[in-house]
Length: 430
Image (tube, rainbow, N blue to C red; front, side):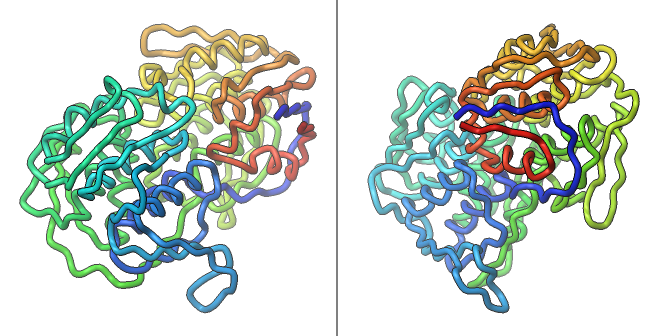
């Protein structure tokens, strides 16, 4: 798909998409919860659909509510589970990095031989963690020198282990979920150099919402506590997605004003920090009861920001920084190499086509902003966040920006271009 975004002024309001971080964790928790789970406000991105497919492959029975009652809204998802009981020899996580890293330890709760598979950029992402850690908890592992596909055979038996958290917190999320499913007690997971701590806060919040109890000491030690029996029926509401909403908020800051609804200001999502960057850039922000009202000012200014714990913010931050006067410095480039693309290089390459200079200096990205965005044809490089970042920057360009392979947005925010259109942007799709 080609998306051509024309310079546009935005107005009106938009509801943030459902959080795929919250949705995928809810799917995992509903699988390991023996009973019924009702998931309200479910997401429908490719990653969300992959998570639903995985839990079905691992034994859950899913239906979508077609009739509403006092407990269930139309569109809510009902998950019935009797624990991890695979119905086939393989599960496929699509292109979801969280999915592969979270569901592999969960799948290893079974004694069945299971092939863990993915597609797209996921087959190039390192998975050495499983080769190193799963054998310590009784799981047989066979990978392709640390890459997919991976064959595993459990059952996983919780034990005291120490893991490296520097590559991604998602591996820890998977281990926490798997240990919780066994009602593990008197065991400890120690973590060295944990990155993206807010995402672990989200994992713990989901586990707590279902009734499991996990405590940590400075994110270096995680222990599992005794808890009351889980309820036979559990309801969980997926919150709005700060990752996707970051693009809407930046769009409002440079081409608004608009109002973004459906976000929890007390969320544990890491990407809530977009608000700090917008404030530093002197965007016009007003938090109202109905949502966040955001618009441009006469002089957006360069800012400094540490994205080490929220690397998914790099693309929207680059779109913002491109419009800000001065040189913006963003720390955390080392976290970008193993995303859907090598995002540091991808952002540098694609924004250069639009006349924006980006320097990569060690762990810092320097964005030279303030010049007019130039009309161009850019390539998403099959990365959803690159496509959206370019789409946002196009709103203040001197001509249309054509984005090739724009269907990459389906990974996380299927309605992104539609939402821009509803806010008044001219977007041609073909």
